[in-house]
Image (cartoon, rainbow, N blue to C red; front, top):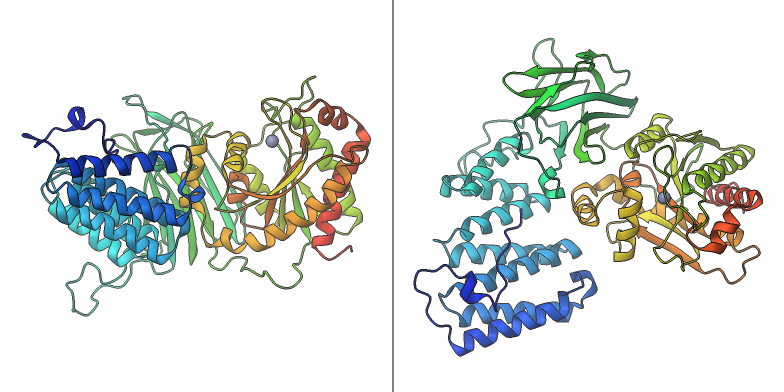
Length: 554
Ligand SMILES: [Zn+2]
């Protein structure tokens, strides 16, 4: 949660609810204004990534000066709040330990300097969240405990209590024992480790209603090393989860509760799951108004729970620890490649000026690529063979279900004016730029802001470990694809290899790329894509890039 503090200056009179505000001194006022002006100049339409470090540090100093000059006036609190948010943004952008420390200190200062204000609890909450997010679980749990105790009567205090309950299975062993005492309680689940993404952080809205949120169906995909279980709902629903230890004959279980939900009539109550990680699945109404989903586990695993939208569904991914370790050096083994023709069915994707649809283009190209891969000795698997709608999680699950070594998603680009041309290939990386974020928003069918949040919460070690391989794959594909696309169009721009956040890549867990073979929105781009020989050439060039990546072609 981000508490929106009022603008630093300008709205002082309107925003200040302090009982007897003293008139700000000249120095306080002018220092606030200076910080405010610089903040607007630097970050008005940019993110911290696009601003130099020196400028950011300058802004940080202006906030500090303003806070000090304003003494015990409300402006001091606002300046400290702004500064803490700035430090947090910097920490999120850099992930550098020093920046994380600076952000934690900035929030600590709010709690220390304004102990009677409600923002004191907010400072604690932000610190706890940051500490947990940046791998400092001991500090995170200690802060949550302090928040829950000290601010028991406030919303944030209650949030602290809820967070402690939700995260209890992740709690490091000695944080609830008094300091200095030997550990009395072992970790409840040393081998079942995971986390759930808070849907509120992704900007998902939950309507206030008493009507039950119907669970429409549960789908699952399983391989020996990976399982995915997806619950589909009629409307967004929050969730809680926990791990239950093995007792007697009962195996360890993960449960997910959906408060306010009700089981749809056609959902089977129990299901055997073919796979090595999960061997049973049960779902039941839990009176008065909740649904519980239980997965019976067979051993050590990691898991991640996150929501997707359009339609709303909750995804549980489970995998074996150490699945597919990073191997940036050496020749990767490639036997099976998942080819993912973008869009399909109800989803046209981009549409050209005379009506050519992206979904048809991508399918034709994928078929040609599959043909050429087969000739090269690699088994292709398409995520769809016909013009049908396939969800993002299903696409990556198909790749996982066939144990694909690579995942290649094929798309055609578009821009609103229809003036852009060229070829570009993306790999998944947390440092995507603004343009990439907009493109990702279109391909993901989700708002750009939510993607930023997904970036933070989902970019885990597995995806990070694959970045080097994904980039290499992107480079080899882009090279061949560009050569193929510029036949007859010698001045076609090579837009190169770029980074972005695509759900379909985030959830695929193997090296993967998303390629935008041409701009279908440009009249010449569309005309070219109408030629069967262009589609064949593009498809074959993607296969050639994959074969070169695999060392099967020079
Ligand atoms: Zn697309």
